[in-house]
Length: 358
Image: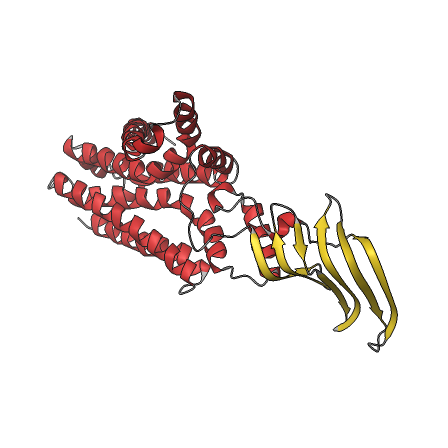
């Protein structure tokens, strides 16, 4: 990296820092006014704690537009002061001029990729504890289940007529184990309760079978404690019901638990894929903004600013639409999360190709 790269990078980072601060302040002001009825009866401590916890989330949301504006204003300033022309005259191609901005934006996206699995889940959990958001109906789960069957481990099935997460218990509980597709054991009980370590079945019968499905033993019990693999209550109904409060590992475990329970997982799989793709929006809009500003040059900078904002808004709409289609199962999770990125990446490369020919 030479002095010219450092000069371009300094200009970009200084504008980016100012844009992040200004847009974040506007975001907080708009959010506060929108929630004024909620905050009216809350203490100043709650309000302060909420917005302190919300800082990572706010920065994550506003980073794409801040990077877009920083990239556009940086290149537009170079064009206005004829610095971009001087760089071309010195034999430096356009892509080489823009490379420091792209590298910085990609590294910035990488930081958010890391933060989305470390800082953001904890901060969002605290933020949503203070001011609970509306639940997404596609992700909403009741703490109560009826006729609920759950695949426990490789060879077990746990069934409840009614299951309650608050009491960690279920009525008409049945546990069955199989081997090579044949039943080897079945427990029928009036109810079952989790005691913190094992399941305790009450007032029931225990049957065991040999490989020929012949009943080998039958017994009645008042109480039976049983350790069942992969069948803890937290696997059955999660306390965390919003993807933004979960790490990627927790999301994967939640999807596995829902799949074992026979529940639909399209919405959760789309959210898991979106958690991987969302941070890279920032890198793609940096390409869009800088290439668009280079296409316009010194002519029509106000127009380029308007087009840039329109493209950023369109990008946001495309991302949210893709996620909604993923929730509905109309797109695969991979398509829902990455198709908008691919579309706008191609658009940015088209702008860059056009700018390099002018």
